[in-house]
Length: 200
Image (cartoon, rainbow, N blue to C red; front, side, top):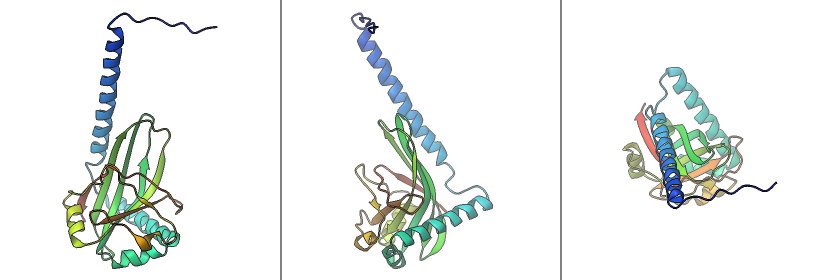
């Protein structure tokens, strides 16, 4: 049986397009508000939550060093680094990402941070990964703490695998690495990610 096509009256097609545009804008705004609401509490609210996040960050760091032993030297030489053990990403129609992390200076935990990323486009399914930021100097850490750091729209992370950290590329004083939660190579788009910070 053939599909039935219903002709639209003059002006109806434009009205439909305007409704679709408004729906898309509403979805976009809703997504941004949702990510903003999640990032209102940068640090976990309870001591148990903080302990869990710190433990997860430590395990993620161990997996990273196993995946690429050269990252250990990079981290040891860096004035600071941030570990986001689980960044959740992906949705149907509206893509976004969010994750909580821990900020270290000289291997000591100094505070908690989160990242949020909103992107509009066709994205099906969800995925999660670990993200590690390595700071090149004190200025980069201060910019991060002051919440003035964000990745450019076209930024991508380096997929962590053996030897990649030895040739780290810094952008605005930050090198970023990603892997999946099993410690395997994973490349993610980090364009537009923004960060908040709360001292310990």
